Image (cartoon, rainbow, N blue to C red; front, side, top):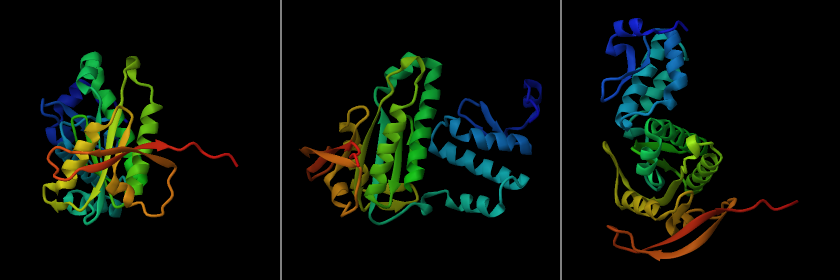
Length: 261
């Protein structure tokens, strides 16, 4: 790929970039095939202003890839159709919500290094969610919101993400910890996303977790049925959630040690 120096970069139009942030900084050049390939490889390393900005940049990048014939057209068209609320699951679903503990303190400690930390956290979360069969709904600030068709998928994703985050080497020994909440329900899917008590409940549940912990509701545990999990559910008792009329029984998820053969 030819080096894009400052002089060449200045000559490019805003439309030659997949993403222009709120401060006018132009990211992910897509003016030729080699830069599109590079942008595809680097997309998940970029910290976007919000999820809407990420979705727009993703759409522009996929269209550029289609234009240059970098991946099969059928794949690109499928990806473009997959964007938007219409592709999210409906009916009985399970939500996973996470956020970074003391993100403000980390920002003060790391300064310009914080965006890199946020990008790495999101990368681990997205990988775990995708591998478990879930879908990302939103990512704002240090929060990450995903949905799954089943509760075992959501808990597996949460456990995998926590393992990956715990094994990551963070800059300057920063104490990066993520807390997670998991809850099941039947929300309504609108053009603006999910609406319903389940959305509020998972947010309150996540806020009760300590760094590195996963807290799930009894509704989620009950939805497991007979499916086996390499996890134990430690009862935390019944709690009142702000804005939710009924109290909710909660559990802390703990990975079970493998049994010896």
